[in-house]
Length: 131
Image 1 (cartoon, rainbow, N blue to C red):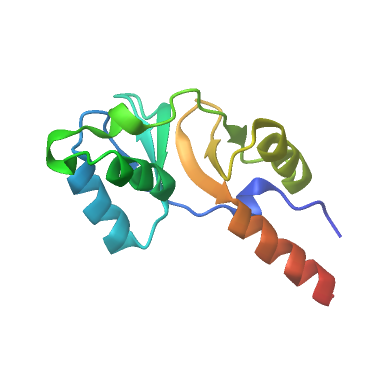
Image 2 (cartoon, rainbow, N blue to C red):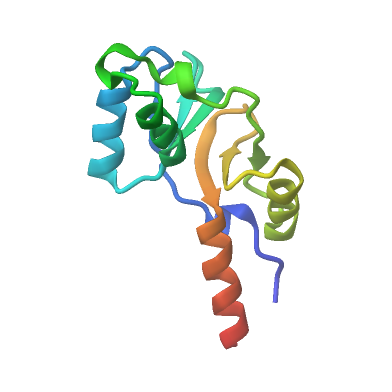
């Protein structure tokens, strides 16, 4: 059995937004897409940040008006990515090392092509234990 890659587990396409999009508009897009995260990209589709549902908890706790705040204000900008050909094991190690739950997947040109989450890894392990 071949080693599973991130391409096998990733969600694609991934919801991407511009850094200056309002937090309110992005929250609505996340709700509509059933997404727990978005990747913030530049004009070349290169990832510059990630915003998760947990960041919205922080915004709420800080009484931030999402209509007056851009996503880059609360986004994690020290972004970690991996390639679509990388193994699931390597992706899991990266997520553990960096203590992250969402890992954007990029192609050879460093453009975002998908995302893998801890939920994806949990589902993968559950399926592997059934075989």
